[in-house]
Image (cartoon, rainbow, N blue to C red; front, side, top):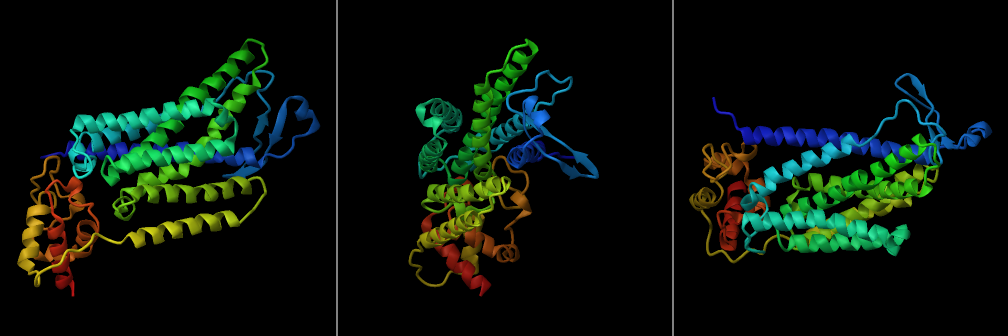
Length: 396
């Protein structure tokens, strides 16, 4: 019995990443909703430092959460810390990044047509962007720019866009997108690990010592929490982007990513304001319009230019191109290192199979350069054009 340990490890890490990600994002969205939905407390509770409360019903029970301006007068016996969801989301995601993109850098990360890198060089560059992004973000927060949330948002968005531009000119489109997401995810979890939780611990320590906690600690943690709230949707976009080559395989893929991230802002803003009772449907309309504009932009870039083909391309020629350029992975006996079975069970060993998957081959190997991965088999533009013509003949 043969067990594909790499595939199982990939599954376990991806599953863990999704589970912990749901827990982290769910808690984050809940507390943003809670914070924006609080109502004025009673006079007696105001004297105790309560600034807002909420009555809610869920699962057959009634709940009455309250928020304090800084902290309660006395430390409660039991206090829950929301942190492990964030930590394990990052740990599982970073482990998956190492397994997929660093261990298999030649397949998923390196694009020789952009920059000829060794796996070590590519890994070093990737990690530099991921951790360097946090250093830059943190310094930006501590500067005078960080005192103005709107100004900060604009500068940070432009900075991330610049990072996306650089990454898309260094790595494969897929590898570049995942590194933008990893950079944002690292910023978010570092906010929890370096700012939010430490500040909360300082407040707790002050209470236990009978001192008045510094309100600036809560304000700083709140600011970072708000930043995380607005970065969530772009990070989720990156997590699913590898399933959509139309996003990362076009010439100006960094603009596509920036456009969709910008479109996510009014959508998130709509919900944040709605929680406060301010319903403005122009925000989701603006977000939807932004997505439509990006879709039109992607369509306008078109597919790979098709070279002139002399004469018809026979099924035998199609099969030969597929055998030489695609079957290293997509075969019942793959020869490409790292593959023991065909990805997603898609095999091109027979003409029947090639015809069955012709639309997929056309999209990923002809219209876009997403396959072969990293162009490991060195498929030329002429071969892509010939393959396209041959596949059209097969399916007509």
